[in-house]
Image (cartoon, rainbow, N blue to C red; front, side, top):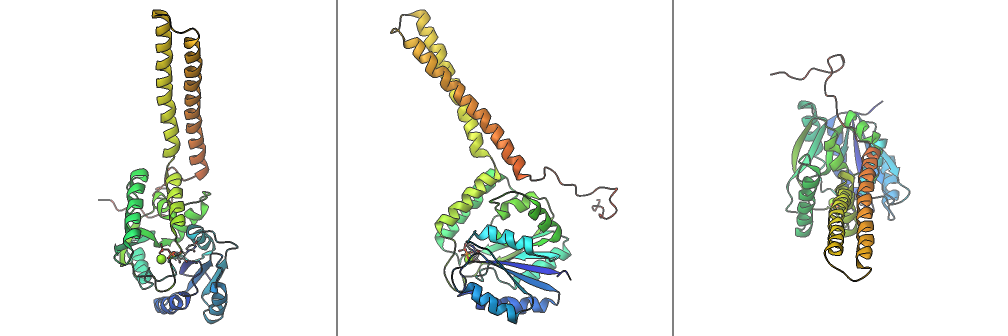
Length: 318
Ligand code: UDP
Ligand code: MG
């Protein structure tokens, strides 16, 4: 039987918080009165997390455990969970109780009522995050809006609910290193949001050190645009113009006066080849960029409605 709701929980070394998390999540899901499953993705934990999960597995029939062989990171763990989830709706939530499980009920209600395929949990209050986290997060979202356009919602992290169609679309993307919060808005599904207050981590320490934050930022920039590659093109074109001007200048000097012997030919050779190389690099960059976006294989358009397809409902017309 397919569950109505799957809850995907990535966890890495969460032995301290796990019992608290289970205690809080279970009553919320039981109260929903629907068939559900919890997909706990153990992201290669090295502490007691797998042992505890085995224990909970016996006590909680709706729990499912997927263990990754090595620590692969938050985004990869969520992706593994999305691939395993069978529900009509799939939610993702952190294990540290920063995302309140109670909000899941509101998300599900919003998704159903507003016919939204994606319901974002949006942090209305981040006062519980450290000043450092808030500043870096703000910088991250601003940068991503500049690079990726305004699709991205400020302060929407990975606490969200998705319809089966959305999850299938995400799973079908061949892209590696994908940053889900950036990719999902590009899929073009109807969206809604539910505000929530981000709590303190209930126990244990953050599993997101600066190195992982930097990796996320790098994945976001390179995954979302080939702006850095485009930079090579502009350098190439700029360099070509400069080198070409030098070439003309050197020839001009040769014609009008009498430079040091050998100077003109040296400048012509150096400048000419530099210009050619930079231009070729730029051209290569453009092709690499195209190969990259093709390989990412994000759809270029989405058909929301086709009058021949009886299964779809017509959009509301004014
Ligand atoms: N996490 C994971 N793999 C990692 C790092 C983190 O699965 O390599 C999980 C972690 O267990 C938690 C969620 O991702 O459920 C968010 O991590 P954390 O709370 O440490 O990040 P923060 O809230 O400090 O940004
Ligand atoms: Mg956290």
